[in-house]
Length: 241
Image (cartoon, rainbow, N blue to C red; front, side, top):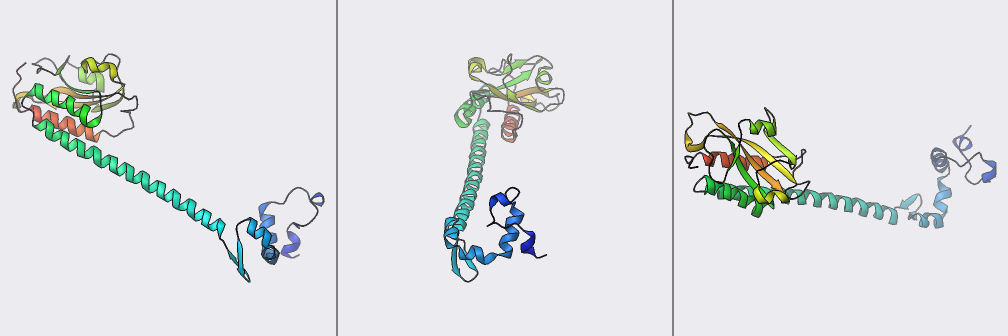
């Protein structure tokens, strides 16, 4: 039995067939009867194909449409990559400038003020604050935490926490009403530059006005870098209260 005998006859009366033919049947029929399709110029034009010669079919409109769609997808993907790259570069630039601003601080209170200022002006946040555990002196403008307060917020071994605002987190003062999500970064602080003393636990806290401003799935490298600059800069001066 030939291939043509095994495949469906597309020109037969539909009532004589048991249901419509499936694509393997159609494909096999076209392979066995290619000239039938090539001779039907009106059908070729309807589906966007053009005959240029014997056994030569030009995929004009159909091929062009597919190429244009592929080019558009590639352009969209390239634009998204470029947008992400520009955003990352801008964020890194702002972070480096913020670090320079922080390193110009004159004392602990000026350091806390500058951290809040760069968070608002350069990163579009609602507020930022520095907190340190007692006992021990708490610099003016810093937020005091009871002993174990950092572990209470981050866990015993937690280094960072990004997510919704804590209902009872008293770190941002009047700006707390605007904060919807926060980033908390653990710091180990040697205030006064006395490296021989045991480091005191502390936090750098950043508050965003957007609920999705900080989420658990985000990377925290940039805010952690800023927190590291704060911790190292704070070592310059003794605690004045």
